[in-house]
Amino acid sequence: MVNASLDVDDFDTNQEGNIQISQEQFQKMCELLLNKVKNTLNAALHNSNFNAKQINKVLHVGGGSRMPMIKHLLRNMFPEAEHCIEEHPDEVVAIGAAYFAYSLSSDSKTKALIEDFGKLRSK
Image (cartoon, rainbow, N blue to C red; front, side):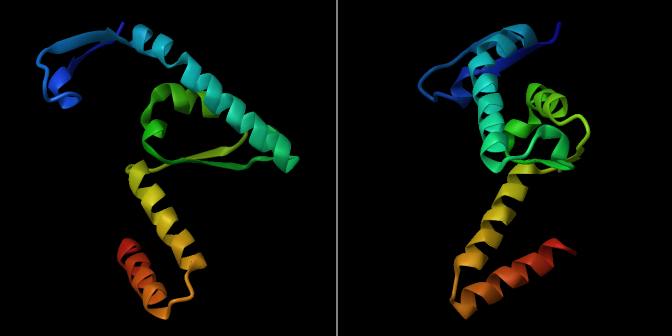
């Protein structure tokens, strides 16, 4: 069993100390979150009229995608899909937001700035 020690003042600077937690305890604490993620994915599939076998690529982005239990959930829900896991999943979210802003923007200066950012990213 894997155990971790969390430094309390990383979360609350007014307190000191460490909290010991096992992987099993952490997973138990996250059950509700995992159920919400699974329900959201099922709703998205239903609303889009797709089924899991029709999904051929799953992008693991955002901080939650670092959690092994999220990776496991996604692999179980989409076993036939290619799972794309970035080294920096938070950065992928920021880049996606920049591209979305670009698509909304009619300001040519903003578009040029975002295009420059994209060119830097691809180097």
